[in-house]
Image 1 (spheres, rainbow, N blue to C red):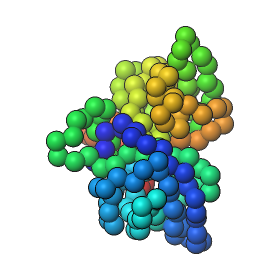
Image 2 (image 1 turned 30 degrees about the vertical axis):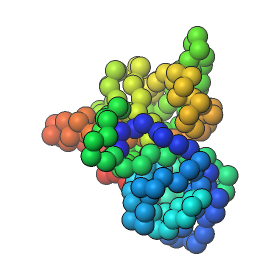
Image 3 (image 1 turned 45 degrees about the vertical axis):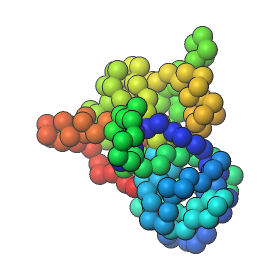
Length: 201
């Protein structure tokens, strides 16, 4: 389980294999807690560590994960947000994030408002009922508050700190991002018979 508070960014340095791909990621620092079998949220996708060394770690991407998240487009040089699994006693500073991506959205536009950036995304129909104004959403693994929701789009505001310490500061029109709806909204939608497609990890 995660909180949507990105603690580092990492660079994809190697990819290999058709079908199921192995990807090596190098963060700023590999924490001592990262071991073989650890779960790490990579751009919001919960992935399992298959190898680790002092400068990086590797994860495997199933064909489904590649098809249903932005991971299918990862190449050497791709920068991704990282969050390590929540441990007992850690603060829950964001909101509960599972690392199970619900949909991929496209950035429609980015506008500046004072020192902040307002980012507008396309609204996937599969999770439209799970996104509400002032509700929580994870965008590439980052816990954000939804500003406004329309029929086919929603927006969030990025404060300068978020833009600096995550990959979201580099977003521009046409970029794709992973979305995970708030888990409470997901179960309410399911109970009301309005749930969308299954998730991917």
